[in-house]
Image (tube, rainbow, N blue to C red; front, side, top):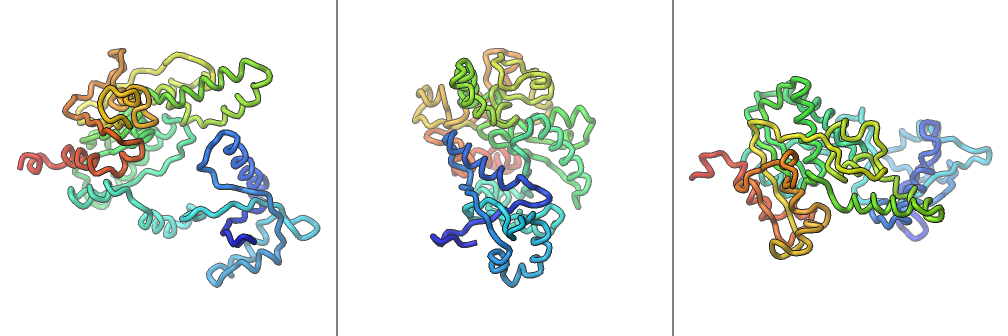
Length: 355
């Protein structure tokens, strides 16, 4: 729809399937404002009548009018409550059963420049994992392991080499998948040759720990306790970043918002797999305060490289397979040309590296 101010917005009305869905959109936006988040689209309360809505259909959607009208829960006055959500460029609603639609969306979606270049220069066929970052890392890891097994079984030709590149939480999900894939006796771990981590918080991210300590401090006073409850909307996946949880045992039976030491089960890197780690720091040289504390703005350099004072937890990635980018942030790792150069050097066939 178009608002009076000529701003395009999506309208989510109360429906039989999701009667409180519109309220969730409004609540999410209001809570995001309280928490200072800027990545939740604005949503405001709005009522609409069928006569207003039917005028918004174009030639491509005329045949959907009947099903949409039946899906909405209308009040006696002929109107329905809903949420007007300011439009986000590229946002689309695609049902999972519409395979052609979402496959086309994946094909047309923006691909990080580094990934497209790897496909072009080294002949890799890129496949992207879309996962729910709100779930525990271990839940996503187990599901990812199963997906890879099915993918390789159904791939039209024999897969010669499997390489996984994981950015941020994706690296934790990849390590978790390796653990659960081996535990389930899957075949794909035997085909995995290389594993590249980009800014992965192997041993946690201080910003999540900071949010955790805010919860603890605010919860001490009865006057600030309501704000602590707001902080506890952080998802299971985000709280796993506090220490870098990978397994069910790292969180099961525990209050994920309670103050606790690092109780993770040590998980070594997969055997016979060449592992590489790329870290970034906003500092201009090694040893800067940003390097030591925040690293790329989210993940400290030591955490991204798998370093740990406890030998049981240290990942022992050889220095020849580590790389640090200076003057870069967490998202720069996805597209910076120096990052690509490091990955290309590592992933190129041995003959190309020695040529």
